[in-house]
Length: 415
Image (cartoon, rainbow, N blue to C red; front, top):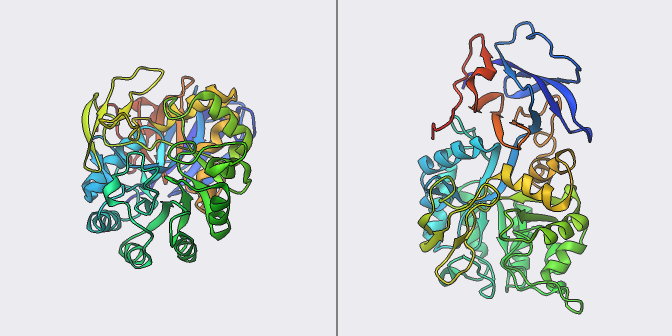
């Protein structure tokens, strides 16, 4: 991969709490300098390209830690080409890094999915986002809260199987039910291997969830959904997550999975530093409404609107992932809780980066960090995405003034 020196100028950034003019110099895959300026400077000497950010807000690139698929592709396809197709779509929506997420499945299918992610590698996909490793959603979850996970393949925690999966590829995260027999031992093993452990699809009591947190759980999968709820005499998993200041809460902000008022409650309990926006998107995102497959199950996707994506449901009405994109989730979240982009931006970048232990290289706009960036217009739509110093998506090609180098970003309709 060939890198060039890139200048981003004329935009603004909210990282200081209010929108401030900013110029960013990028050399190779990292940010060389970040400076505040009240005027639009001339192109820097020696810069191979300049990206015009006029009228846009510059943010750290989005990190989606929980996403299954896009554009007809799914992690469970166990195909590097499917992962590349997903990565290209995600970049169109501001995502610069993601965790390909599995479904609960038989051991051979899960192993094949992990091996495919390993084969695809951890370098950014051409004109797409970078994979940060696998998120195993299941199979060690509660049969009482399967959600859209195939119930027939749910099984107790298995240290041997988990070890084989970790040996096969870059397992970064696992969602499990802490109350399952053997779960605490697996949580400790996962933490010893550097794998982030997440409570989800769980019927755990408050005490059981707290025990899982003490063993090493640091996040909750799609908070509110597929977990024991809050009761004033039995706070359940939800009560544990909302009241434990050290736990990060993943949230699907599509206004379908969670009511806006519940989003506001979560934000008040967790703050931006412990809220992680996810999409939980399935292969139908980016495609027309209709019938699709998720983990071998038929899912019907309804027609959505500009304000809300369509619903994804199994035949029995169970919600089955989403067709949400992360820039829309960020807008929905801000509207629900009554905060501005200058206040909510960490939930799509800094918070997930910190939760993954990557806060020294990703998730903020600062010298020495990876040049993973997204430009949003005033409507919150993605104008450009930069992944490790390369413009991989550009809505308006005239914004990039190139003097040579290896920039051939995707434009509209190029998927």
